[in-house]
Length: 292
Image 1 (cartoon, rainbow, N blue to C red):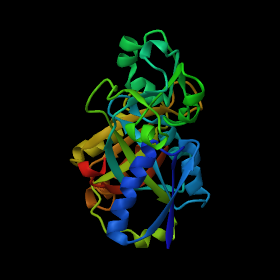
Image 2 (tube, one colour):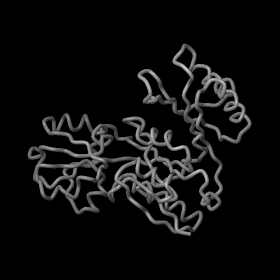
Image 3 (tube, one colour):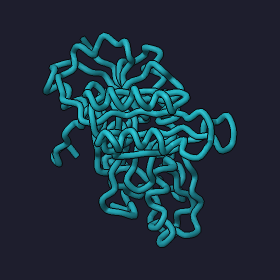
Image 4 (cartoon, rainbow, N blue to C red):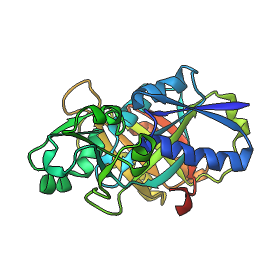
């Protein structure tokens, strides 16, 4: 069986690199053959899984500097058939890539909004007057750099090597410990689940909306987890997009969904939530430094 895996393209993105690392781990544990399929956006990568175009998608969900990747969270909420299979955390090191002869010749810098935000202090110090233009991915603009010597892009050193482009500055992210967490997503009813290696899930991700914006609406479900001794590793709010002041709450919990205390907790919080979605239980795929 050949497994097709969607990721944010074009080639050279961090999402592709995370997918390659995941494929190595999957191949070692299952021997499955894989094919990578790049998509123009994170949402399209996830929709490819939902529509059966691919069996998996590897998508970024959270960065240590800029926080959550809202496109991933919103799409996961909107599409009921998607589930998290695994997670991996990958160090991120940004480079400034350009065919310009020096920094003072650069007028425009392109990158994914997360890439621009993760380097904003460096850009403010060394390129304070340039125009910053968000793109769909860190590599989208790389193919045009040779045609305009006043442009640059923020991407990985690996991407510069793939496109045979010069690097003007390395490790320009504002914090050296910059890393991004990725989720591996499948369909609920996918028949590939039986082929996955057996893991002991350590985390569960859920999201819920509350019936009304009243005092204690969020506290009550959180209190359930506290009383049962379930630790929260992340909590994030997102607008429902229905009305100003209405929010969804995304939570990562340090327990598997099939444990008695999690079953008890989820049963209890049903009484306090309007819509409750369980995205799945999963474990962390190990990454060695040799893979980076």
